[in-house]
Image (tube, rainbow, N blue to C red; front, side, top):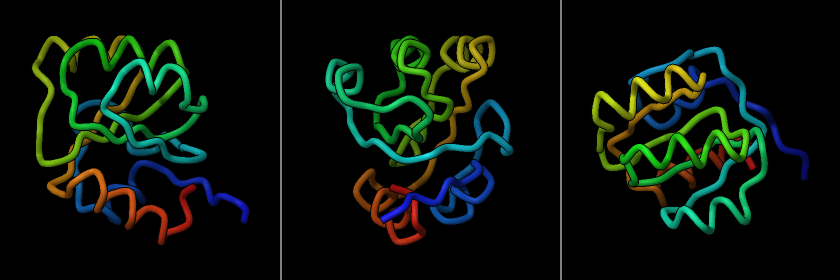
Length: 114
């Protein structure tokens, strides 16, 4: 099954989310769900959307190291201003949704994001 790339603006419509920092025009080629940073480092592919509940500054470091352009934080959690500033400097979009990680991933799967 071929993945269908999605732009952040499309993703936010699907999951009812909002951008905290970054661009709605960034495109992702897939999705990875995980809260354990070492797991994301070991297994996430470059170019994917990363869904997590983590909000600390290390998410920006991990996303940068793995070339992950977008982080979607679930359960309406919000990164602090320092983390958002670091994400902006790194060119990483951070968004939030009220959905759980499971719910967000399910909706995105149904929409064709793999």
